[in-house]
Image (spheres, rainbow, N blue to C red):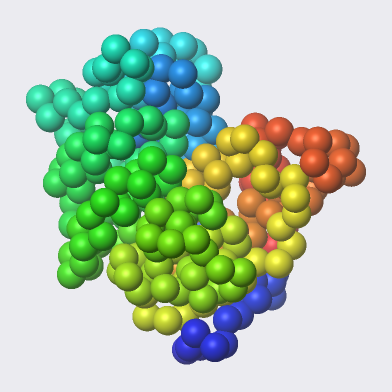
Length: 289
């Protein structure tokens, strides 16, 4: 296996030799993804992550977001079960241990926490609720404010053996590192993976806690658009729900995210496409590796 000095480039050939599981049977064989996030003012983040999970092959989708947005989300994503979570006067989602969220997290095959959340204290409560309720081998994807919450408790995942994938941007990586990241994102991803005992996907740089590393090199400036990270988090969750291992899901997701953006360039230019337009490209990108 490669060590940290042997970061492998993610290519179609590498992925073909690392084929994704092909589920058989009904939707249950492709797993249930639960996405938790979406404050009153950012419900679209949950929508993007959830639809990306379906586009990546998840069988069942569940969304948990601010109660004031639940009805609209259920109409926008009719394929999903949608539950409303209590919210503060500022629209921040609050944990509800007596509600349905714990039950859903306990039954889900994959949980994604973070897209669209606000409020660091409330997010910490949600993080603890999800980790307490989910099975010990249930994969968890942490994104956005969930990463900020994790940075306040850096030992939270240590020794648990739980399969976790972190999807930080540069700012969030800085919070997790406790310093500004340097230019060597392979090294920064590796440090984060070791520190938090989780797989890390940092702008196409994927690192595992055991020191293995990969790099996706076809991503372009257009991916730096609002909502793009939510799509990546959901894409990862969908691949995990199909049975992919965390590092495999992270590498495939990094590639599919980048190449889906490349497919949009002829229509919209390098920086003109929207995050939601990535969603329809995902299945074709995965199918044509």
